[in-house]
Structure formats: C-alpha cells, structure tokens
Length: 309
Image (cartoon, rainbow, N blue to C red; front, side, top):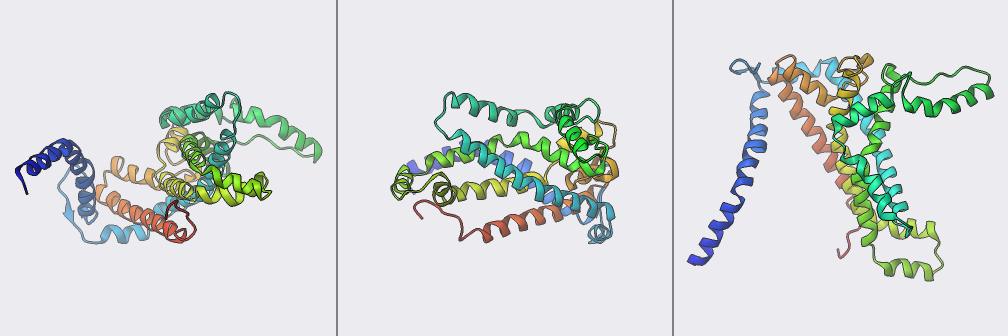
C-alpha cells in the first residue's frame, strides 16, 4: 500500500473515530454488560454475584412478566396494522395533485415531531373521562345510540377502566403516523409514471391501479414501516407511563392493563434495584423482537418487489 493510501486511510479513521467511540460506549458496552449482568445478582449499589441461570428460571414463573408480555403483544397486534393503514391512506390522499398540498402534508406530519412526554400530557387531558375532548366528541353519537336502542351508554373512562386503557393508547399513538406517512409518500412519488400510463391505456380505474401498481411498488416501504412499527410498539414506554402515572393510576395502570415489558424492565432496574433480573428480561425481549423481525422479513421475502432486482 502506498504512502498516499495509508495517509488517506488514517484520515478516514480519524474522521469517524468520534462515531466509533460513541458506538462502543453507548451500544457495544451496554449490550455486553447486559449479557454479563443477566447471569448475576446485581443491585447496582453492590458488586454483581454470579448466580448462573437463576434469573431466567425466576422469569419463567413470574406472572407479572407474562402479564407485561401479553399486554405488549396485544398492543402491537392492534396498533401496528392500524397505524400502517392510516399512514398509507393519508399518503395516498396527500399524493393527489390538490391545492395547498404542501400545507396539508406539513399539518399531518407535525404531530409526529411532538416529544412523547409532551404528547402523553396532551392526551392525558384529551382522554379524561369527564372533561376530555374525545368523550365530548363522541357523546352525541352515544346519546343517539342510547335513544335508538332505549338503553343507557356512558362515555368510556379511558384512563380508569382496564377495558379502555389500551384502545385509548392506540388512539393516542395514531398521532405518530407522520413519519410512516412521509415514507409511503416518497414511495408513491418514486413509482414509474409509465406503469400508471400503461394501466390507464388498458382501461384500469383508480382501484385497479391502486391494487396492481401502487401497492406492489410500495411493498418495500410497507415492509420497512411494518418492521419499524413492530420494534417501536414493543419498546413503548413514555406514552403509557405519562398517561397513567400522571393520572394517579400508578405506572402499571388499572389492573396492570398498561404494564408493558419496557415499563417492567424500568421498574425492576430503578425501583427494585434488581439490575441482573432486568438484564435477563432485556435479553429475552431482544430475542423476541429479533425473532419477530426476521420472521416478518422471511415471510415477505418473495412478496416484496424491489425495482431493478
């Protein structure tokens, strides 16, 4: 290797060295430490003591852990498809050549920029059972149904009733579809115009073009948003924590209806000071997310269209 190439390589390493150091300090070290601490009894305030697989054995019989897992899986199964469909539908509407479409795109994207803690505080008031705007909006419809069926239907207590806490969280999460919407919108604009022109020559209408052109061209973007949606829904923490704990319902919510795995890991670490147990849960959690992600990518491998492939 010439002196010039060695010098350029050294310069390149020096330029990326801050990122390398940050990656080692904030990614590699925490992951390796979590693997080590998962096999220890570690309270943060004292030295870790090796206990083998005892933490994993305790997890297998931990009812609270399994409750958090069921809540996390249930929330993910409901919220991810709804957010995908909503984001794709908004992108489809905003892809039309309408007046002031730039303004509408900005308005639909802006809510996704609001920090989760602030969003939780806002939705804590919107979902208030007595004074919340959501209940005020649906109250006329409830009164109409009550009159038609001669019964009494009251507005939901979104933050107090275990039956409605998860639906309320799903509704609040819809405000974050802006990022997925922009990705779908970019995919629609990258679709070759020649395909739509050919479809129109063949007499295809809007729905035919949507089914046979738009959706196939969007499959890589659907896969990306699906994977990111699964990961994001499994990591949910700030929104339910602010919604419920701020409403004086406890961090778990009524009947532990909003106790998610990320929240349980936080509690074991910073409330119970059981770092070893929390690290063991984290490893299981990471393995589950990785398995689901790889499974989704494998199942959609032959149904995802990549241009030029």
